Image (cartoon, rainbow, N blue to C red; front, side, top):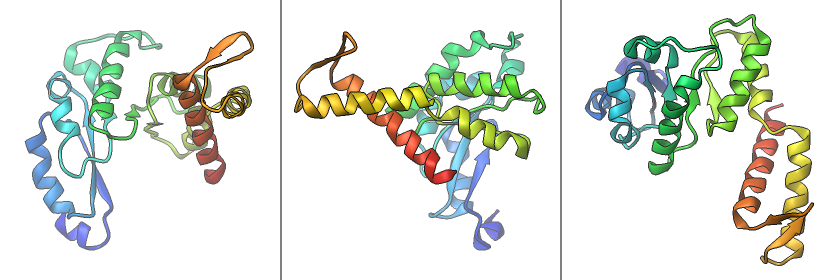
Length: 200
């Protein structure tokens, strides 16, 4: 690993992260400029997720949901409602550690575009900022699905414009109250859209 780091290795996705101490040797191997993305794939990893999120050189968390199901003996439906609380715990741990939004796990059937889109939309709604891919054909689909829809962008622009016109006060838009949390959400959507435009 140290040899790879000397040749320009940027970072490592660390599988089955279960405690922060396990990350220390890897952080040392990749060097100060290297980053770590720990995969939470077990009950033990979830139990220590705050310590893992706060470990040196951790860029963000990722969810290995398939191995997690095996570890806990779960049999999830395709919508994976059984894992909703687990995903939320990763989102909250990321926020507490001031990390970017976590990365959701793969959609194993890379030919099922509809499933991939649903999974990516669920991830974005649930507070995830990315999704692992197992095939190059998934990348563009995930990037599009993780961004806001045209309707969301149009709404966000109207919210920001209304808030600016109100000079920081509470305003009504389409019969609904627009206060600071709503404005911040709109600004986040516009930032995501701008990020997607730069990528595209």
